Image (cartoon, rainbow over all chains, first blue to last red):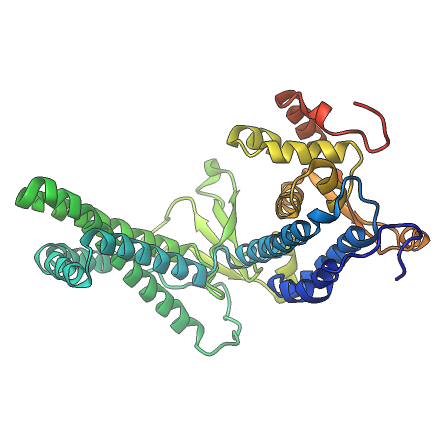
Length: 299
Length: 110
């Protein structure tokens, strides 16, 4: 496309932006949004090269190109990160990544506090054997023993889900990974808290350690199990958009409770307001693929 | 609702206020806003995306015919939504000097 008559001559540096940097940086933008994003920036860069400039000096050209390069990267990075967050929010992978990141962060802080790997490993081993094990084993046993044996009840036959692992295996693997990471995080947090406590109170801090370990373990196990109940049984994404259904005063006559929807449109979970009997569980309602777009929040 | 949240959470920063003011004065695309506000592209574009996500700004592509007539590629224009106009009003109240900083796109002194 030719530029307008009588306008500023193109710079030597700015072609680098739209010919080299723009195609390179555009890979940060997700594929569906990439053409529109590139088109917008091409139009903007055209304005830089050929458009009317209000207050522009030649000496500022290099600085301007550098600033624009950063702008391109920042914008593409923002779009890419935002899309990734939108896509991954509530997913099983995102949950595990967050737990791993929290564990790593705790580990790094503890390494800084202890100043060497040897000292850190010694602290970990001592804390694990002397204090955490005392609580971890009975707490895990009690948590598993009292965990309600809610079957993954479905209102119809489950549709076959494509993937490497069967649906039930993925469900169990995710739960096991989440529980392991949660317990590890609980352990690391306890150690992190115990370092200053031990420095101040010495062996008198043992009681605090035991109480803290109990609280952390119980909380992490409870959160893991509760989180699992609120997930889609097909894609393991966190269910959203809770909606109350039915008037509670008609409890004896009609079903009432809360419905949660999978944002991918796989189905909905019916959680009764009151458990009618010991075997009255949440019901997972699979929906036909035709309803997927209607249930997704973008619709 | 969003405006209240923005104001309370302190997200209606000076930068956002300047961008909203520029949009209200007729500056409609990224470079236009950058030139009149002096803000770098690394600030303006992500801010525009956030404003669009929060419903304060909407964007649309310029008609191809108009762009062809001016021998340039079509631009993506940003305009204030109703909520954006409310936010811009609140920003002007919060930062009264904004009206002196940015000239009107069409030459009027505000």
